[in-house]
Amino acid sequence: MDKFEQERFDKLLKLREKGVEPYGKRYDNTQPIKSILDSFVADREDIRVKAAGRISTMRPHGKTAFVDIKDWTGKIQVYIKLDKVGAEQFEIFKLLDLGDIIGAEGTIFKTRSGEITIFADKFTILTKSLLPPPEKWHGLKDIELRHRQRYVDLFSNTEIMDTFLKRIGILKHIRLFLDERGFVEVETPMMQPIPGGAVARPFITHHNALDIDLYLRIAPELYLKRLLVGGMERIYEINRNFRNEGISTKHNPEFTMMELYQAYSDYNGMMELTEGLVTSLAKKLLGNYEIPFGERKIDLTPPWRRATFCELLREHGGVDFEDEASLVKKSKELGLETKGVDRDTMANNIFEQVVEPALNNPTFVIDYPTSICPLTKRCEYDARFAQRFELYIAAMELANSYSELNDAPEQEKRFNEQLGTEGDITGKVDDDFLTALKYGMPPAGGLGIGIDRLIMILTNNVSIREVILFPLLKPK
Image (cartoon, rainbow, N blue to C red; front, top):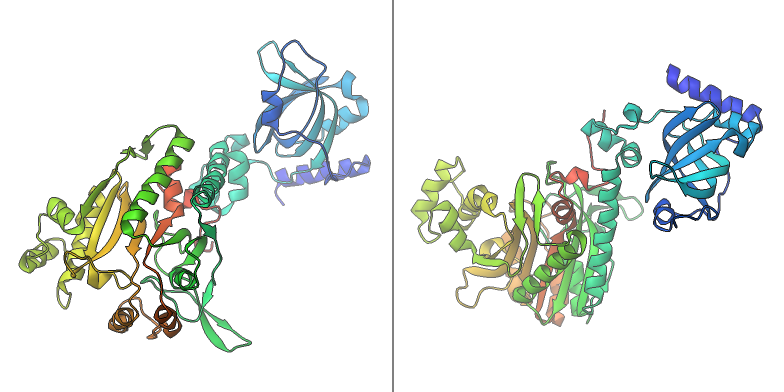
């Protein structure tokens, strides 16, 4: 125990000697600090209020003191005066520290400097803090420490609390938006006997009672499609997915995805829905469509651009999808592997290197090569391409969508072609999903949106760790 903690612990003992419990009991009928500030009426000093919060500053002046307390809605000043609270309470006040949590009751008034203040006639200690807040309450600055001690980050950095309250509001808006359009929210398994719905490396666990390996889901897709077969025509799930892959400013192994399916729609319908959802969020949260993102400026004004995979490959990569020699040459220029790499994969590798970084304003990239879209219907104009889009904003993939493949024999053929490819570690086809398809799945549009990345964009945070309460970190 260092000297600062020891000093606070000594004060805790003194409080108990005075008959004060430093870890208080229930404290009812408090008002959010913001509502107290908003409801202030000038020229009235008889309005009683009751607030609770953490002490962020203390300014003692002999027989009086001013303290600021913070709750998750705001900060308010509390005026403590010996003559008002009495000698016994004032002695207790002297044992308080920054970071302690107290309740205060009294009337509100405005000081000569114009600050709305609670003139306390009573205060109650609710929690004694044994560790001082960081840097004398100037905020926790060390980025790694902020992520490790998010509990301190939240109460010491107002903008961090604001980000996560906005996250909650964004999720509420998404649910309301979809509910108003006739979608219902469902839940599907997080532990699956066969990982499917995406190409990714899963986390493996073991069920002792059944003595089987299970996989934390990499996507909910195949279970949600089973529900389409069952007759649930508009469904969505805001779910946690797990991928045993790298960590970066854009990737966390555990992340939040919103995935939905709409019977009798297609990827064009999903583009309309996606654009409507994101622009409505921007308008509600930010008030306009032109927003900052790090050093970038993003214009979310609809309608958003739609361009094919091949068009963008030509525009930004200077190569023609039809010209395999030019793809090989460009791949070598970029230091990409070409030996044993088929044309479609080569084109996609080039796309990731040179096209994605150029897509700043919202762009629907449509009609990807069919070979890299095993769950997608082919384009009617050219079977080599699939009815799929990916949405890019600020050079990040934000959404992925298909006109869902509902042809059971074709789906089985593509699953078998995919066996043993990168990302397929089980060497198994999901036979039950194929059985479901044989009963008949309606034509449908499917959509997945990366919620963490969407929140990054809407809150101007360029690292995914800033929008996940507890991101995965290396052990100390």
